[in-house]
Length: 208
Image (cartoon, rainbow, N blue to C red; front, top):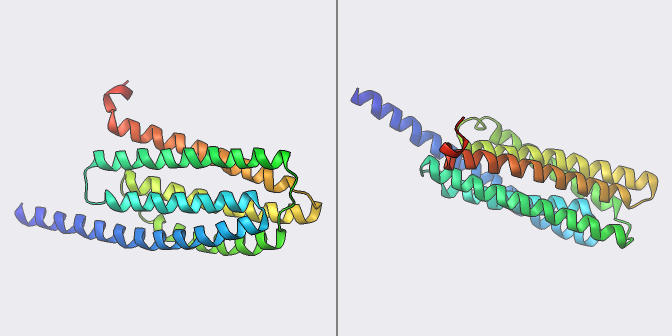
């Protein structure tokens, strides 16, 4: 029995160390891409690039929270998931606000910059998604982290679609529309993460 418990303890420790390595890697990638996409979005006047940059910043903060609770209890992990959901909700509302601003202020985004930087961001997020995929079912913490990464891929494809459509139509509207879609995706995911975290924190309130 003691040997079994020791083996189980080693497995848990190894899993936590594996989670930490993965989270540090994706944290670094997202922090770097926030700077790259944020700068490019400002220079190109692109709502979708700025939205994706904010997403990268949000993810970097999310991964930081995930590292903080790695060796803590399920309740701590649920609290971190609650914070993640709050960040996702805030960024989704921020993107909607940016899109609303662009509706009334006609600015054509730089489609070439959108395409190049969007492709780089997509490649970076494919790496993050691959790193997190095998750990997506390990616990609530890693599950909500993987959900963020999955949304990143969808947002990246959206940026590329917006760049192509804006080029073909010579219009700012594809950029605005994609920004709104990304915002809606953020908000839906935020409510999902918040709901799961609330169930873990206050299970009796959700008992049937």
